[in-house]
Length: 190
Length: 189
Image (cartoon, rainbow over all chains, first blue to last red):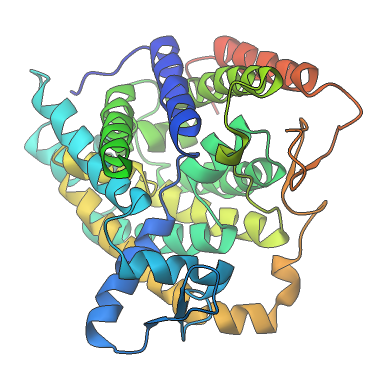
């Protein structure tokens, strides 16, 4: 089992991190960077995904309508990988790695592949389920314009209406689906 | 400097998400099944307390207003949330926590990331069609970039701009923090 801080300590420290981010730079957000990564890969194989365009607000434009949105902001980040948002998500992987290396108790080999609740559920093919889950989550996050970090935490911290709408939509679907999908798993706090 | 801040804050965020248990899909799935509300308590308390501090900083002018960034509200936010929720429920990861889980050695998290990259490119390629077929999905609700407690920043609307923002934020913060405190560890259904 991994270390898990109690809820109060967890809440206070998490709040502090979100505040540090908005005080020093801007609110935390993650899901946009999946689009930026895709755009970088696409850009390797195509000449005209991103081009310089002095008439756009960012100085860059794209022939894809989504990447060209907001004055070519995404197009600019695709062309310049060393930017705040993109490095931020890679640093998050490092943060998870450091936290796990600094704790004595390790996760089991079984848990690395699939959590206990999934193994008990009677479902197989955890990797297929997570792959499909990932596709739904990022498609939904891009349609919504943000994810748990950007909409729910950063958004609701600023009391954004959009953050509340996103949280409503997410939990309205996620709670019944989780209860149904994992109905054969054991109940109660593990 | 931007690079240092990205690595420092991103690294800290990843570390903290891992320590609160958000990198473990077991904790997220059992929260959504209402069997282990640890993370719900964490999120409620974090939103409430950070919101209160942020609005104190805004009221006293101690924060650079250009750092405040409000996302637009439109019906696509709710529909996107519903699709997001289905994937979130079956996988137990979200776009940030999968990175932390992967960093912590979870192999299933990598498949979530790969699926996420596919979902993101499908959206990128279909955006033009979605936007032209369902333009009302992206029409602003209540002015779009709107907050409940007025930030005092002109480009963002405030839904309760006749009441002092700090009072509104304080009420919301108390509700969230009390909710975090009173929420039971699990709900039997």
